[in-house]
Each structure stands twice: as C-alpha cells, then as structure tokens.
Amino acid sequence: LAKATNGALTAPVPVSQTILDPHNIVMVLLVIVLVLSLASTVYADSGLPNVTRLAGKDRIQTAFQVADQLKKELAVEKFDNMIVASGATFADALPGSYLSAVKNAPILLTLAKQKYIDQTADYIKANLKDGGTVYILGGESAVPATLDEALGEEDIKPKRLAGSGRYDTNLLILKEAG
Image (cartoon, rainbow, N blue to C red; front, side, top):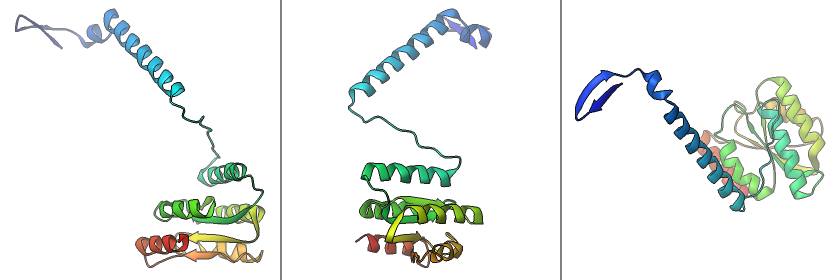
C-alpha cells in the first residue's frame, strides 16, 4: 500500500505493517467487543424466546427431532396427521409448510434409498394415531411408491398430493389445507 503525504504518494508500505500495526489491532478488537456487547444486550432485551437447536445425524433424523419437539409443544403422544416430502428438493415441502400449520402436522423428509423409506415408515407407524392421515407431497419421483407400500402393510392409507408438476402439486396442497 502506498502512503499519501500532502497529496503525493510515498514509497509503498508493506501490508503486514498496516494490518499488524498495534494501533489497528487494538481498534479492531475494541470494535468487536463493542458490537458483541451491544448485540447481546439487544438480544437479551428483545423478548425473543430462547432458541433450542434440534439436529440429527442427517436431514431425515433432524425432521424426526423436529416432529418429536412438535409433539411436546402440542402435548400429544401421537399425531392425527403427518406429512412426508422429498428430502432431496424443497419444491413440495415449501407449500407443505402451510398444510403443516393447518393440520398441526410435522413434515417428515425421506430420500429414494430404501433405508430412508424404512426409517420414515417406521417413524410414521410409531407416531401416527389409529385412523390418522399421512399426506405424501409430490409424485413417485419425489417420494417413491415404496413408502406407500410400507405404510399399507400397517393399514395406513396415505393420501398422495401430486400434480403434473410442482405448480399443480402446490395447488393440490393448498386445496387440501382448505
């Protein structure tokens, strides 16, 4: 970096001297401390609820964790309704969030591999009330028919909401929500 003195450039100053200048380091640290102290004060006084981090070893397990938390918040042991969407894309899960809010239902995710289908089916079997409804969002390319089959073994008849594309699927989901 060149240093300007009275409008004229002087010899370049090495970057290490400008960045590592003790005065610059002290100023940067003071700014960081100030920002952090203000941020914590604003957050503490904001009245925002405490945040609970929910995580599983993958997105499928994380969805189960979120569903378990929803059960606690709704004070239920099992759900009346559950929703399943593809864990590979968001196109069907996004409008499914509205259906989720209307039906007080968790959105579970699954992937095409059979182990994920089995995990999702097992979670549904353990957490859906008798006579409850499972909504599968999207066509069989989004959520494979093997999930329908796995649930059918337990006399759970899922309701698949699938249009000819993501827009039609979205409309079907909104119509189902009422």
